[in-house]
Length: 401
Image (cartoon, rainbow, N blue to C red):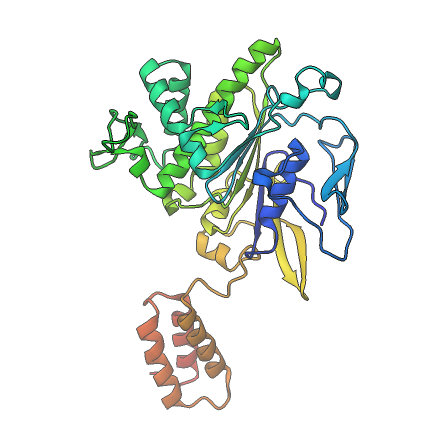
């Protein structure tokens, strides 16, 4: 496969098991030289493996898979600097690569190079409870402790978190607002932050819906990564990055349709809130027609791209497609992105196919058409386009009164 990502928005569609997550993992590896959670890409047993990549039209890096070493090999040295990279994985885990904290020159190896963390990789529970280094040292306090600490201190990090939550809210009528601290167990001495629900009750964020927890984790990791990056830049005497790359697997995961329609523009707005004059690149895999319809007003072919993975003649193929506006989510279901015959339940879809064959047959008789008509009326809504066409055609043929 070969693809050139757009510099702003990129979407990967395709059936399960065809390689969307693999492409995201390889994109992460190309930028960071690490594999998320140890999930290494492997070539097929009887073939050679090679990954080639470049940044913004620069020099091409090549890596081959060494079966003897069970590793990807290539030119020694650190990678190009892609900016701040955040990877939201489908299982709730995250990975963060910081150009200030995870990027070093090979010639400094005798000092602190080998001791630098190559990337911050969080399992789902570590996002909430904290991440530790191999020696047990704390690398990240986790969402629960940091949220509580930021809320008590009321400093810049807290203001940034509130701003991010506001932008990521599903609508202006349902803002994500914090509440007072609570305790959820006699055996847990932590102050647990709460979120104020639209119906007025304050709920511990641990007990919020899966979709809300996904948004909280995304908001927290972005603010945490940016705050830590700023502190590291001060220590190094360097400027902060102006580039942010989001890799997001199943961007719609756990999100209500209302949220799916706003999440992409919200992510762009979030980074602009935190970083002035920032360049944001999003590479997202999705199975959601609502995600695709939501980007129609934003999509610019000069900066954005849509890649579709299909199975053709028992071979997986990848194609960059032109994004033609479908207008609504149902139309996207039957587009090349999702390849469905319709948005109807499968039994109704089969019924429509039989009805189409029946009305096209020269042997169709009135009794059979009337039985089929009753089945269609029972199955489809009164204004269904097929039902309207069916009535018209059968009426013209004299098969229905």
